[in-house]
Image (cartoon, rainbow, N blue to C red; front, side):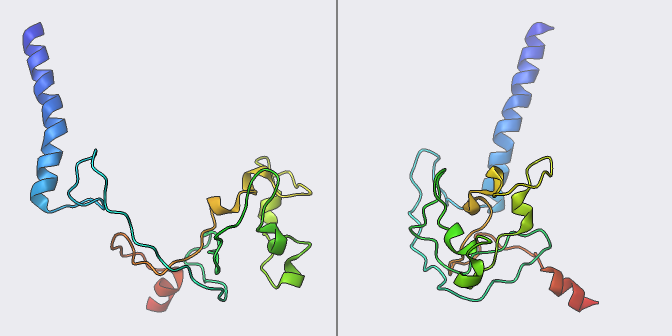
Length: 152
């Protein structure tokens, strides 16, 4: 009983490990790394050009963090300094002609309103990203809200 249990378990584990790999090879599925072993380096991605200053980029869904319509190369964001606040803080946004930080960034996890930006919202580039002229990594069928509304 014990020997057959061990043999059966080994066969099941082997099947779970090797069958998906064999099926992926036969189905033509290729990872973004290409046909490279995990211990090999993949090709270095080419440099992309950042989008220059532009108008705000429209959002595709309601809770989407706004995309950054300018480069952030060289922006310093650490515990003591946040370059984004130079233009986007409530004190500076009008003079800079920038979008002001959302009121939601001034609430903590318990929804207490704070006088300054909540620590969990301080590191802007956790959610907000600048755009580059790159093709999507994978094809998708996502359609923004407007596209869905226009179909009706």
